[in-house]
Image (tube, rainbow, N blue to C red):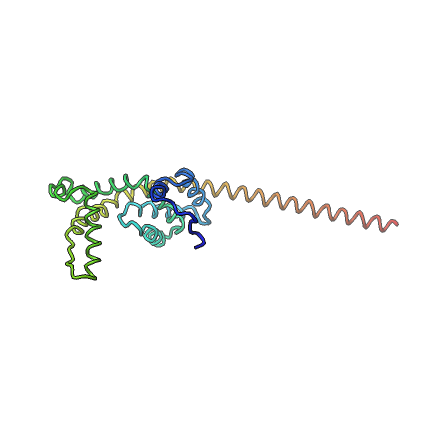
Length: 230
């Protein structure tokens, strides 16, 4: 493959790169910011796209954030590319805070903040592992005589996925709204400065072209004068 590594990274280094890119998160953030500001669209459309991307990162639909962000941006008539870039807000450094805020908000909204049964089914990590095991076993059961059991997946849905989905709406709206109102004036200022620089550059080119044309006319007139005198 053209883009495949010649030398495969060991698993521990690949994991480290996932949580901390080679160039660092600061450089990655600067790249995303630069790309967003240079998008060829009105500021309010770009800001709407940013809202959509940030909002979607608070949903539990991991692996589908790009599609959801693009769909929401399209519905809002926002910039789709900006929405995809804004999903960068959800990264290994922020997912813990995003997940915790979404879950706790969901527990509060659903009134299941201190339900004793939650403790009986193990910790959050255990529920993830149990749900994954159920999913694997049930897929295997499709091709064997084993009996499918959805108990642990149901527990995961009731105690993790659904509270996360409901609870992510409020912090997602807040974070998306903050991102919208912070990015809008920044993008407007950047585009205005860029238009000013382009206008100055065009004016300078026009002035240079006019000077060149005047010089050419003057030279032609001078040459004609010399030819007429001789």
